[in-house]
Length: 114
Length: 113
Image 1 (tube, rainbow over the protein chains, first blue to last red):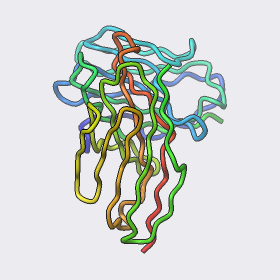
Image 2: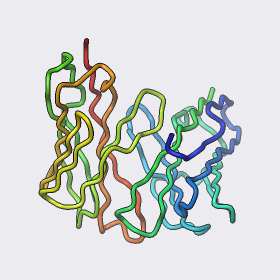
Image 3: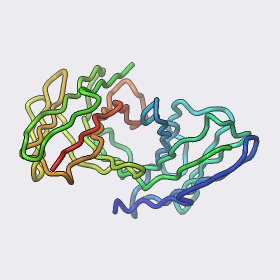
């Protein structure tokens, strides 16, 4: 158990809908990262927050957004869903602030768009 | 742009048959190279961090090594429970203020009893 929690574990929805994925980092970690994993792409970085502020963006679509709250939990919002958005979404956390920090991953949310 | 290439894509071993997985990387200013293990449908589990060429780390049957261009994950006398996908990732200086990881696509290891 990494100490990172994610809810829900599974999510099945229809095209055009909007969903919210939630992540709670390990106690004491300030950085939260979101990654998407699909069969053909591997793990792709989406976005990073550090202590409530956006720190970096990766390959995140405009239909997707995220935020980190004062209690440091984070939410990833996915809207106008398409079939191609079906994937595993992972949250990771680290102490934050250093490029040598280890990132610990949560169990993931499996999103299926029908 | 930072890149990570892992080989082979898949590896099938008999129990007790030692082997190595390769991770080749291109990064401007390596800050850290990370190995993770991932079981199907689960989150990556941290194994090792290597920071500089020549560094080695060991954990049970696994040993990770690092050169200036690649890292190896050596598996000694593997057991069926070592079956998983092994992921390699790097952090580099070119990412600005971000600590994002750039991942390879992984090596799927199957150990047969």
